[in-house]
Length: 85
Image (cartoon, rainbow, N blue to C red; front, side, top):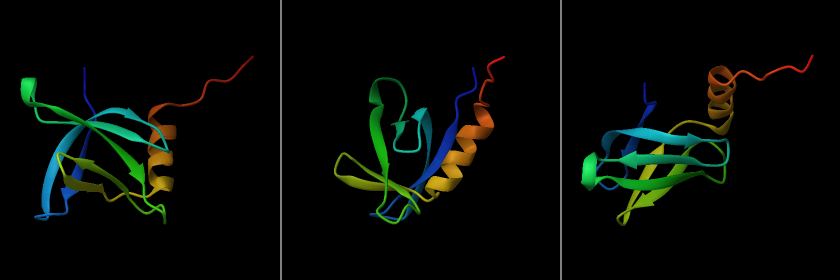
């Protein structure tokens, strides 16, 4: 199984982290940070201007610097719609 990974930025120290995506929709992206018993789940929500997704994990803000439109295009690309016949 290939897990989808995205790169997020920890705003406190400008560190980049690769995290695993659990679920991705236009309105929310659920991710897991860490491995094994030391993992933490986090939900990222779109910013007011729709240019990024943000969330908090253990008191630190993380940002996925991708727009809603790009996420919507990614979802459409990875999950093509099925047609009725």
